Length: 231
Length: 289
Image (tube, rainbow over the protein chains, first blue to last red):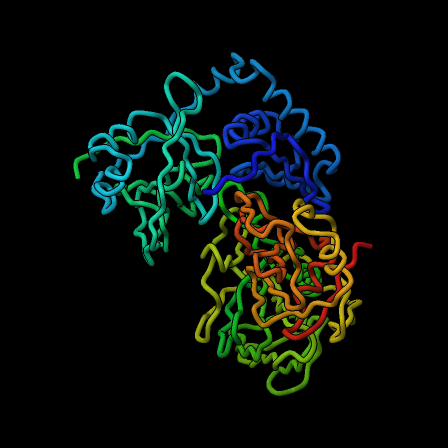
């Protein structure tokens, strides 16, 4: 999670003939702008993919013209990032109306104690920190249904996140349902896979189900709460 | 006629079921997947009277051997190689009747790399996000095809097999191919000399080329700031990524939805089919024209 790019954005960058990348200054800006983009998404747009500093918009021959997509991205980003634009009444109402996904966690992960120590806390403090706030799905990646979650504070939209180092030696297998931390993110492994995130707990929640619509439990912009259950 | 099955006796190194994929799910972490040679898929389906997006087999190189368990119409497009039905020579790029019990064989491709084998009706199987395709990176869709598989075929469509003897096609070219590219988002990570070399020097397709990405070989490109890190960003099929080695990788249909290597260019959609047919060792040249 090295952040060496401090360009201010928003900037449009060409991604071939069917996609354009909107570059923003920070992950916080991505969350704000992605929310505004999702709310005004033009019909026929194929994909809208938020990531760490960017939102990728993909169109095709049947979708809106690339130039129109670029104009919409820039105009929406500038509106969303304008001073005082973040908390429009409509946006806040939508936010409150949207049900949170609740994930029940047994905080029995093999890295719980060591991770708490690294952060200068007791395991109970780390659990309290993890369960005290809502988390927002910033983006997906790594595997279908794997969501990069960022913490949200009660008093402001995005809290100042903890920076959690990855394991120096990644595990060859992380079991499905592992609740983990890395960098400024929390995540839940949808299925067994290799990984270097620090596992603090486990859940029975189904993160990916082929037959569901959408198959992913956590989608960008969605909110999550972790609730502790007995280990 | 009801659907039937095709019993696979030999599958070659990497045979999968593919249709036109599942675009539009990248935000969930799912790549578009689908046939790498989409023109070949569409043509094969048209030849047997299917809608263009029915699921077919993408057979890498071959040999591929299967027995029809009912009477079937089939069509083979994409790669070029010896096709036989019960040992008798058959043709690609046309609808062919295969009787129940007959053995179909696609010999090792001599031109191109990926056969598309369509059957009238199309292959059946569970659909995920609108597609029956196998995503080899994400592990979505059916497992890759192996010997012993019985592949179910959907009931035949209402429309007839078109009374067309031949379809316009060209045998995949074995020589140096021209691949047109459009600008990528991170051109400014490379100096002018490297950007010139990208299009002026020929590149060689390596054997490290699959449905996830295709690694090229040649004199490496140089980054302006080799230590600079790129936070992961959304990727598209056809993106020409340049890892620290300086040797470009072209992302294929099963690519990761986000990636942290700078994208210097993107292969134009119309030229992605020909990438699917480039053989290891074959040369290509990028063109911005």
